View (spheres, rainbow, N blue to C red):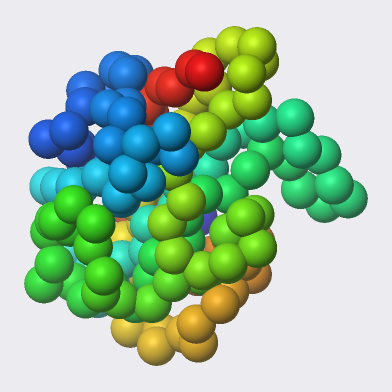
Length: 157
């Protein structure tokens, strides 16, 4: 399938699509990962990966752009939701230079930033090692993506 939107739906009980992300889920608050839920899972799904990326961030490096806030993977196919401040599954490296969730925190005066949570359904359990960057993860999972969709939240200082 590659990277194209599917019928799978990603939602959060904490905020609406294109809505304001509550402060507790940002770097200005408690910096907790928001709860997530998904439906319309593609047949043949064996695992999931979830990424949070801010394409509006003023960071441009060779081969990349924006800012990665969360890389979470090795999520079993039986899982259809994540609780607030989830502590399970495998975390990758963020652009904060650490693993785990790092909430939205756009620079003061930089305007509204859009945060894309991407859910990817995979046709295989890959059992990937911890600490992968978003780009490393995408390279490893691309041949196995059978569905994907996104949830967008906004934040401004």
